[in-house]
Image (tube, rainbow, N blue to C red; front, side, top):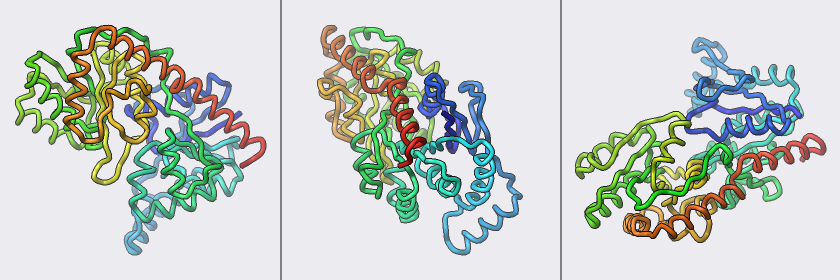
Length: 386
């Protein structure tokens, strides 16, 4: 079976999941080619079959579309879409894939008319912001309504996201949950060390990741326990200046380190050197929400207890017995209490939390199991249509 995967960028360091999907599909005897608007990080994420659609700035049709969109007050970022569609049409006519799989809603909207014209079944996967923040805009609400009549199957990462997709116009029959899996076999499990002293967070430095909430809670714990603790944060983003200012103004620089972006292999090593993982996500002011952060699956696979929030699909990622370590979004008192709980937990309690987390990921977020769901979708669509 031949599939073509269409993404805006392949492969961002923060988007391990798309790379894991396509490499795991190939192990299941599903040919997976990539078409992307930006081919990046090829050394970190080597993949042979990648086609980049690059457009020169002087492209006459593109300039015409930009001018027209500005005059008509339409989104200028889609001005290149007609040109992209022409190129996609030529590539797909030549390659004749059995399935097109678009990653993120906007890429599904872009490629849908071409898939329909060529009669190729289309699968679209939503990941988070594309089925939350974008729905605040009339343009995307209409675009998704049109997509609901074209996409043969829509997949989301959690039951909570499935509800959002149905509210956006996709039918229950059309929509399916496929978890964002991780390569469990490549993440070695270890029992976390005690007592808990080293906190780790991994995530873009944005409001959605709740880093300021985590730091407020951490500061409270430092003051209450007088215990030497370390908090490391991996990631880059638009909120870095605000986070740096918070660290400086609250005199946390001796305990808190911003480590910037790291290759995925180094992130995994950092998981092994930590005692507990922290990711207190929340909806941003613009309405942006998480899907199911892959790093929570990786952290649990590595054996780390995870402190997080009742946000989006996150509770589905955490075994129910470990929900004692979840806080309401933005509730720094609860986050602080959870930090104190894990610091004071016994070795047996921490080992039990650790074991439950690993088993939950093995059973529900193993990428090799999840890609089998995609394979079944592909087989059904290519054989019978939707």
